[in-house]
Image 1 (cartoon, one colour):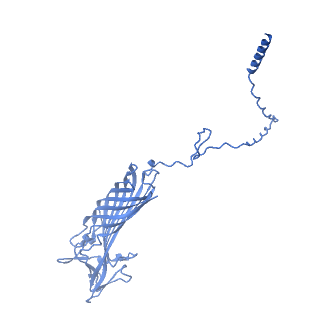
Image 2 (image 1 turned 120 degrees about the vertical axis):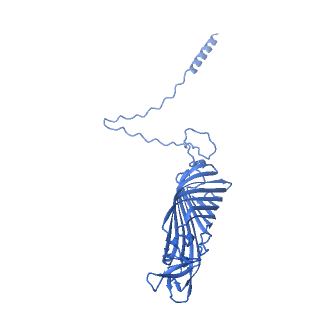
Image 3 (image 1 turned 45 degrees about the horizontal axis):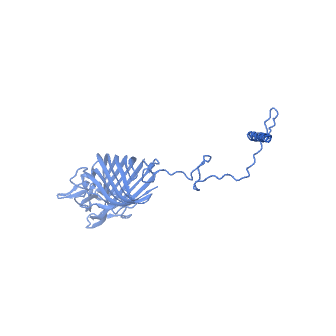
Length: 402
């Protein structure tokens, strides 16, 4: 009985000892920082020693998947690409589109042969009949080559507003033979340079010489372009700007001139200059690597017409049933009239790369009022006669964007 009591007391003591809390390990003592004397800074702490073990490996993009650790700052390998939805297509902030075209224009024929007047060698200040120009029914050519250039730039990165400019050029020449009874037409510096007419009184001689009829047309426009509608495959923009056009008819002695302009000493010319404000629409649709584009514009302004005759063309005459009659229209004064100039362009093409494509095109331009040389060479007209003028062409070109 006594032994049991002794065993129980021993178990109670052991259990009580296990139940006592274990005290935490003592913290390492803080380093003793000596107190500096008054007026001095405390000494610097020692540089901590580098760890001897390996550093923890940082997860990297592209490595096997690891659990995201908020203790790290993850950076992308490259900047995120701009979304296509923010950029109105097609791609590129600059564009340039040349095209080579075949163009048709209307003609205004002179009704009869023109006779020039030259100075009379026997009487100062007087003139005598001179060379004959068989210009009746002739034109510079209704069908000829043309060049069209279009370029522009977007101001913003989203390609929604910018500037666009265009240039259209067409020139045509027709050289034929004139005759000079009783005189000679000489070209001392070549047939593309200045002319000299030598009268041979009483001589029975008929000389021949080249005569050229020329027509030149150029149109230039510059527009502010702003987006109206833009989707993944199409866009529509509004255009507001300025248009200028020049239409010039010439008849002169000699071949097509070289780089000198002294051939103008003997010529007749009618020049039309148009200036106007312009408004229009332009757009395109893209699908499966193909695209259809087009624009329509209308310019409203004034056209100034000027008639000029120099040298032997001063006092020129034209044949009528009653004989030769002076061409009064060649002395008409400069005149300005209101005019409208609409223009249309259409393209169908194929996308080659993101920044290059080719296309076939059709264009049409119309000028509501213009004076023509054929009307000025009509002896029945006493002044400027206005008609309309148009040019239409088909072409092939390419567009480059960058």
